[in-house]
Amino acid sequence: MTTQIASTDEGRPSASAPEAPTSTGSRTTRVLGLATLVGFALLVLFSFVLSPADDNQGDAVRIMYIHVPSATLAYTGCFLTTLGSILYLWKRSQWWELVAYASAEIAALFTAVTLATGMLWGRPTWGVYWVWDARLTTTAMLELLLLGYLAVRRLPAEYSVRAKRAAVIGLLLVPNVIIVRQSVQWWRTLHQKPTLFSDGLDSNIEGLMLFSLFLGFVVLGLFFVWLLIHRFRVAWLEEQIADTGLDAAIAERRAEAGGVDAAGRATGPSAPGAPTLATGEAQP
Amino acid sequence: MTGTWPYVIAAWLIVLGAFLGYAVVTILRGRSLSRQVPPERRRWS
Amino acid sequence: MIRDALVVAGKDLRLEARSRVALNQVLPFALLVLVLFAFALDPDRGVLEEATPGLYWVAVLFSGLLALQRSFAVEAADGNRDALRLSGLDPAGIYLGKVLAVGAQLLLLEALLGVGVAVLYTTELDGWPLLLATVVVATAGIATAGTLYGVVAAGLRVRETLLPLLLLPVLAPVLIGSTRAFEAALGGTPSEGWPWVGLMGVFALLYVVAGVLGFGPLLEEA
Image 1 (cartoon, rainbow over the protein chains, first blue to last red):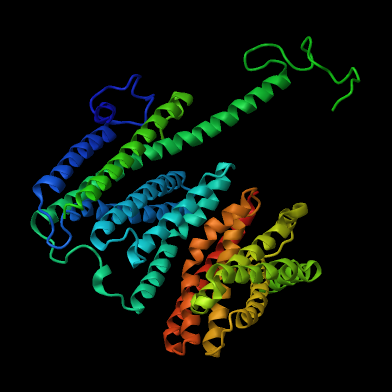
Image 2 (image 1 turned 120 degrees about the horizontal axis):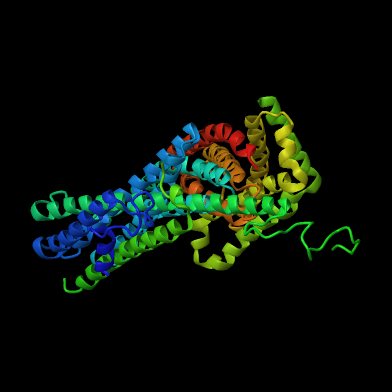
């Protein structure tokens, strides 16, 4: 499986001329992709072999090296979506709209990863898969908000309709997350719970553990950017397909009306064998 | 502590699997869509 | 803008007065939700009494969704959307008018549900100022956010499933805040409730601004 990704990203030249690539890859993504792969390998090495177990959490801390960066990137993606939505609504920039869309989907992935790793960390540490603490709850809400945005963006409708409505949702993502976070935090701290459920990371994380965490941020950050570039290009292609589909349909209609269809055959009222209205046959 | 390792392994496998899966799907979609679009419209310009 | 708002609000409320959908369908639905909770939570075990504020507001939220769906369903019929756009009414005014109409219906609903809760769950109603303030800001939040997201979902065939998905996560802070405030009021510690009223006030303010600005552009396209 690793080879498949490696061959996509490394030095294999694209099958056609540089101006007409048949993939969403480019030199930038190949470099990034390679760096990400190497990075992941290093991260696994550090997380599992080179860094020690934590005094309190034991080996569960090794999950944190993905969990924390994932969470940060999820919120970063959400922020990008809001930013892109603002710029689309304000400047009509399609580039930013596509960034917003791609960001949202990637953020949804990272949020899911955050939740899953959080649960798998929580079970051995707290004894339960889920607690209604401020961070997990807010992250769960973030996922729901992102899914709402994606649902609107994917509506079967014209681009301008989808994009504008999604942009309004996207614009409100960051404010909503802030308000949700605030209300959940007040809710969970007003009635003091014992520190059993306080956040997992020690305040004095240090040495190799700190480095592993830092590495996690770098690697996942690179991966995020790599994904964003590819997903942006895919989103762009989707819109082109919608456009070309429409253009092709219009061309067909015009050709029919003009007596010649797309393949050059004679059609329309003057074509032999075509049903005509003039014969007075019953029409449905 | 021995009970912790299954969770750690599971977490990492899920994460790497999800990341890999999404990356592959995105790349493959990109290729399939590229082929359906005329060359001059394939990239943002 | 205010004049247009009153025109639209008047129209919506008159529509309601004639069709009585809120009265005949939404209110019974809300009461039904309360009854269902009683079935699910078994009154004899004390859970129902403790959970009353939360259950009340969940019932309000679900009924509010119905009221909002209705508010936009009346515009979907017979090319009303186009008529609204061509009418020359200020879009911000249309927005505010719809907010006022839905808000009024919600307030009526909440009052009647409050009676229902007092009776069915034998709740004693204490801490009036806090209860009233909570009801006002929570309703403002539901109506302002709901009308904005309602227009995003309007005119689409998937409206019925899209609106809940969009709106309920957004209204989660209102649910949290209104429930905590009610608990504080009913529990005799109103000072704990007022910060929540503040939060919900900010929420409603955010959405009324977003709605006033966004309703027009959203109404524009098909």
